[in-house]
Image (tube, rainbow, N blue to C red; front, side):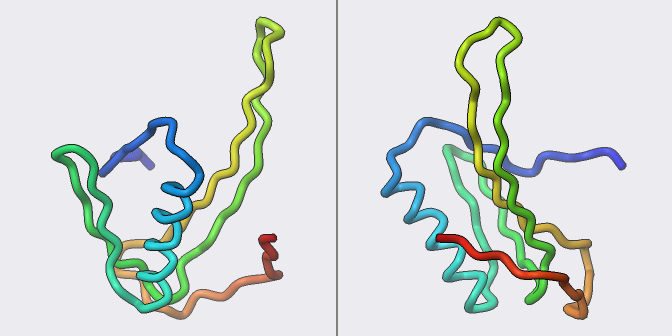
Length: 96
């Protein structure tokens, strides 16, 4: 299925600002409210269902030139447009 990027943002940011952004998403998600992303002149508003799929990945990408590896943690919420809230999950996640 082709992917259409609705919004993209990337820049080096201090940890407190990142935490504030994640906290705002978490607060809206917990309250069942839409999530609006804005940067520059671009914005998108999305309304996740109460049970979206939650994906967490920790990755190490090594350089082919032998340079230092790049580490990343990715958090993704995923759902199908028009999806009802009857999703199920298996297992649980702990973040410390």
